Image (cartoon, rainbow, N blue to C red; front, side, top):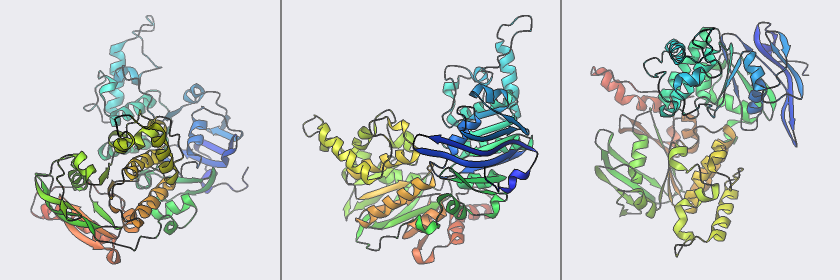
Length: 528
């Protein structure tokens, strides 16, 4: 066991303490002498790259696997879990990234699953009315009584509401310890805000919450403490997470200066490849003018809802542009459908890779060749040998570490993103529109995506990056355009990148509206 534990381990009132936890798999040391504790009334976040040991730690706490060495203390009493059922009975509720919702059951039935109420103690018959009353009470305590009906079929709920149902299930068991694995990974920004608000409420009521997430700004906003893991080892426990910025947190996670995470920018900038003039879509964006050159990385910053994604979808033909022109190498492109944009060499990597970028049920091979199918089937018959060779080559180039023959859904977020990038590399597009390219992936996978972007730029590809992370834009891009309420308010070149200037432009339209008495507000994008 480590001789010197983190400073948090001196607290004798911990709800759960992990002391010197180790876990070996064949050829892999997943956890090596890791110690941390979790107090009642706090959110303790755990962060790290893929392979840092976060998932193994969660599986140990949930009772799914046993550690090879170390101790688990529950209220200062050593305990051993033989199964997930043991952990649940001990008061530890785990909410995994892949939700355990039974789609054909109602909300009430899902919440009360395993704790089904009876009509009375004399009649051990399931009471639907009692289940709905209890579930309704839990949902009311979470402030969700108007949003989620206990009688609704679970399959009709959006993902964010399903996540809340999972939390309600933990609460109905009065679990004093709640473990959440990437709870906001599949949620919209509004759904994430609701969930974080609920977690804050549970913390105030005395719950001990272990929170694992790749969204570092989110982690810093809600966590009382943050433990950093790297390569299966404890690195640090930060008692004042708001005193450290996201860049410093990333450096702790990757074990090297952040500057090494971003490769040198391409300096061979060519002629204008794509030009957009006077583009507008009624009620969404207007008077959009910009160009991007060969080898250049152009950034788009702004608040959530500023119109950045809508502009990219308009250029790609996924949404209609009411007026304006798009030219490629000086020739007008009629972008009224994605197939026309694709034919012109324009590719769009959407914000939501799972629903818009991939067919999750298809294999990695099939997803990679999706945009180049005609190349591999000249007479309507797929030349599978050539296709497989090409997809393996591009996967190797992207350092894809998953299984190409397996359905895309089985791969990690980083590997899924590489599949989306790879299919457009195979298409040989020379204009790439990246919309939030690193959302939901760990910092190690982010570094690889950054490397790919610079590699493509060095080969003369014109690249646009839409991002909600200022540190990402300033380290990747040659220029940044800042949008606010559907308009471009500022253009900043590399020598003048400044966070305050970017934020001022992002808020520009909202400030002017408030000054005129409209009071319109926007959601702030990530800043560091």
